[in-house]
Image (cartoon, rainbow, N blue to C red; front, side):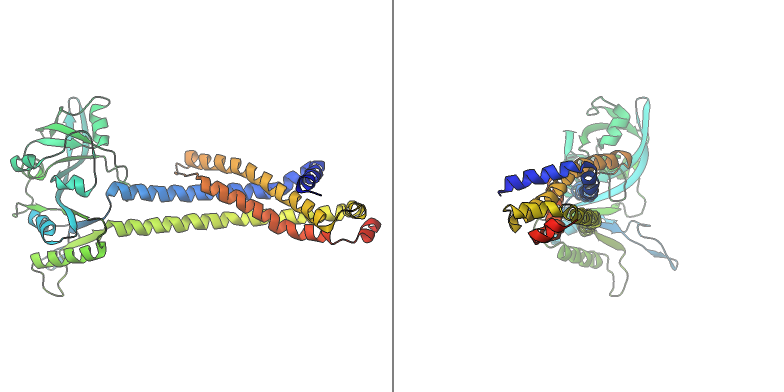
Length: 410
């Protein structure tokens, strides 16, 4: 008997017991749907981390002003601007691994454009900042060194600010007022999305750091060139850990800190933080898939039970077929085909249920999901494997029945 004949007999046997076949497939349907849905949820989490890595910029190190001690009281990190523009330029000049080093000064203000106003973050930057953050210009032009030297009143708008102030009109060339000072919009930044803390990175206005200090934020210390942070981009292929160590050593040397004395700055390697999050999201995706796979094993046990019942019910039929010439391998093939068919049909229905479940989670829970073809192939292949694995024992039991004993079975 060939495979096609075995498949035809198997399908006819499944059609005879439609309800039992449907209930048997239910475990496989739920298992495949659960695997696909959980992989989609884990994939969505991983994709979100990858987007955050891309939005922050690759190979990025942030140097922040640190804590200081005043009158015996140790103030918190960032409580005083302990960095300067010269620190940023020294990092660029003295550390070969550094591609770009950009000083930044941060504040907030109410922005007015015509009859509309918006409260947002103000950041004074140098032209190197956009390179360090890998931030593109969606329209208009970037801040140039001449703007920095002349403290010109020009600004780049994040997409959130541009939409809030100008709706659908083009902001480039328009005038806005920041703390009653008129600024000309020279460009709109490309969309960045949320940061690691869930903050909107596009709710921001960039301007020359000299302009921010002199006309908007003001000098907060006697040291006129003090800054809040330095964005440092490391060249591709360089060791971020080594670059971080060199930056720390350089800053301690420039700030004349003695051995054992606490740093008055902090260095954050964002790439390492994001890499850890990415690895965690991968582990989460695998864990979710492993938990969901338990349903497939439960469905496989259901297939084994039903196939054993089927062998018992059809013992006389098996004996009759063997008496007229069917070999053990023909019986084995028939019952294996039945088990695999149950698994594959259940797997196909599970794909549909999994796709619907992934879409529902994305819509109702506002959670990003990524339905990949690989997860579909994996789930269906696993379902077929479950059918073969759990169907083999009943099929082997049926193929080893003796024709005389099978015909006598009541």
